[in-house]
Image (tube, rainbow, N blue to C red; front, side):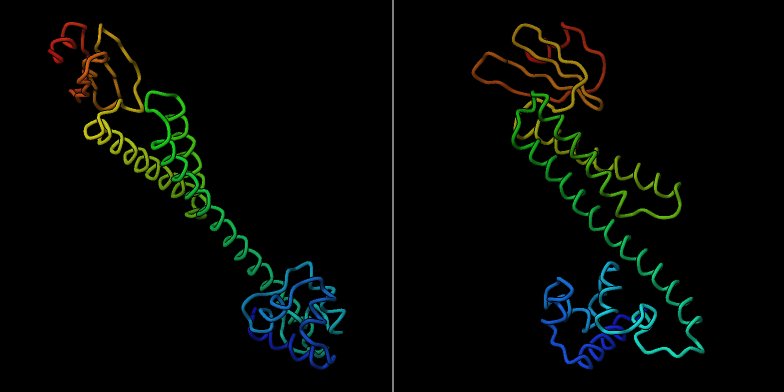
Length: 236
């Protein structure tokens, strides 16, 4: 489907009817800019407008999609071509719409995760919950952006995205513990011993020393099983 050809055809038919873009737009219930975009070949009229547009311009939908008047000899041939072109055009528009939605969801997911990390106390469930929600939205958005016909490729890309996203979050979480002296966001268990708190995470452990003291500090230690004595020894 040649949008530029269709647009010029709409303009010729409109002028033949001695109508302005504003008059045509008013009859169709659209803006002048919409009609101008059609005639400039920037986009096509919505499918729901095909029939009323053709009635106003006194042409057939087949002629509209062809961008020219059609004689009876090749009418059927043009009709079949236009059906195929219309299906391809609709699929392309749907794909563009899905990618746009995917991009919005991806950015929204990143925003939610970032705000969760910045706005909530790492000790609270709200922080980890917002990060998880952000990852979910981001994964859905990414899937819409990269969606292909191959289910296996989609799955591999989605898994890699999830690993990369989680890896980035965990990296920033680790940096926050070291440089911002705050507790880790994702910890499987939290153990309190006197004034010391032990956080057990997936890849590393964190010790919070002098909880009630003036010089509270967080130390990252090797991820292994620690008992109360070994934990207290680290802080001493």
